[in-house]
Length: 115
Length: 114
Image (cartoon, rainbow over all chains, first blue to last red; front, side):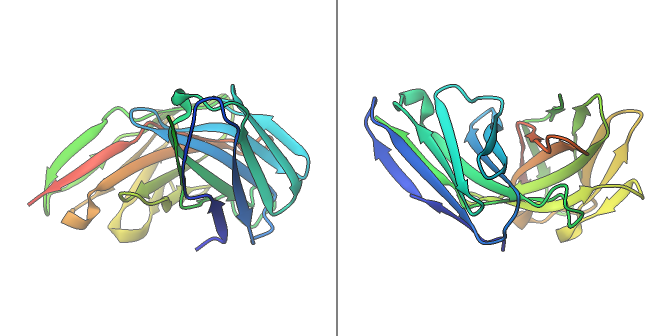
């Protein structure tokens, strides 16, 4: 299994509060991603990173921000959580572009409920 | 930009019958293609991938997929399914250079019936 750890795995928070999800990898992969999974929508890309301090928006980035200060950590922040952000969040990593493979590997997911 | 369409949201099939899960993609550049499986309350696991070469790709658990460039399809097949294949299956596409964004379809829920 790819060395990806997401924390927290489960969280219940109130509307309007800030929330940060952490993704930690031990593979030294350049690319890291945050997806959300919702019934009927599959996985939708929120933000991704292609290096330290290099990030870009995905399909559903509104209401989310990210930071990557170290290769191994990629943080997803909900500045002011809303009920529409109740979802399962997956972190993923990839060694794309290095010649060592283009597979994307997923963490176990973080279940977030906004009440 | 790339997009992926999985036409079937649910596919019921009897045990030991063959199954095909359909995936079509759209892209203005060359792509890599993937199929992932997700069991309940778990993350996604790679089933197989097409990077280059032979258009017929074999994966784990007896699954295979065929890349058809002219029809922009990457359908997943298994000749004989088992109860344990019940899961959700996702098709994904990534561009070959540049952004390396992986775009996923909405998923197909395969239910194998006894």
